[in-house]
Image 1 (cartoon, rainbow, N blue to C red):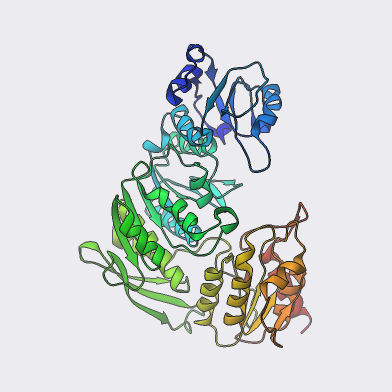
Image 2: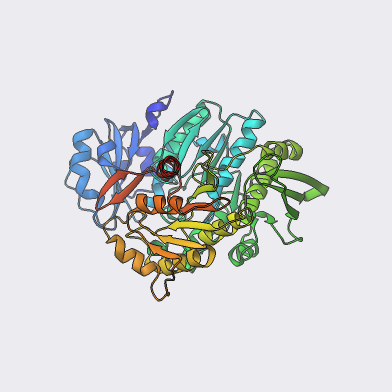
Length: 505
């Protein structure tokens, strides 16, 4: 991303040594100019500082020779690393903690010059981010977005490798936004990013918490660790203001524990600062589409009506959070509400596929037990017939949530189809067996390992007024099997299945 910068940035090695408190007096005298920062030896260019981090399987110091060959002129690493290269080496106890701080100084504190709105939580980050940016667009605010699906800088769209970029890339994105006068940016802040210090050095205008439920325990091990990672964003140093959804127990706890200025939102708690005081499903007969009508009350006597096509209580919470964030960014409440009347969800989030078929077809990224239950509940409210749902679980990830997701599928669907997601290095059938372990599969429960075949089976069994709901992969365009990512897009597969079924009837 740094190749998109207009300005050239640099930082002397002595400035970095002074910043981290290097005890090596000789090193502090070195006037080498660092022209970039990289955590990957393959991305190093001439003049870079290479950061060699300890990893789960190997240490970054193994790649120092490669980094030097590509142009690295100095190394930042931990005190245990073995470095044989003949270049200056900076050593600190926790290099990950310092990378963001160094990158922030290198790019001249770009987040201090723009309004950064950070959203964390298990579910809802992506949809809320997209809603907020649409409000800004509606109000002609030059804005940016950093998240799971993509990075947007004004009208430009860039692919993304992870929800929250590593610190050097993140700070370079902020620098580009500052150069292009994108003064408002919304970003998803993952628990991994918080645990691994990727957002160190970032100054947030407002931080937001959506919810917390079972996910990523292969990394965090316990829900308490997961919560503690998320709660780091709500401590002094990152931001001085927070908006917190208090609908779940974790949100209530965070609201009580955070010491920064806080605003509460809720879909049902009438004591919250922002709350939904009435919800109704409009008659879809005139437009052919379901619309949820929300009456929202906010601070200072604000009373608004919003008609949104986004179904389900969790989407109502996303709308409410986006509205509260928009008002905090200086948007007039009525103008924000008007924007939300026409706002769409994020790609792959409750995304409808409409090819003139007699049943509804929806794909969603739901990949946690709570998200699966919420998605099924959302389509139930607008489905006259049966819900035919397709779901799998990813391989090499938290095994403990597999039976919980299986139970959510069986409980919410009339016809449940277990299939592959991204099996990665695991046997797909083994994953599926874990999903329905201990459950009695009835005649309306099916196991179809091939995801394409499972989607086709769902469509072939759909009748008028049914809903085919394909869960788990959402916007993803590949399926990872044994180290290879094969082209696979639920949207494409679902469209092809609908066309095929129509041609045979």
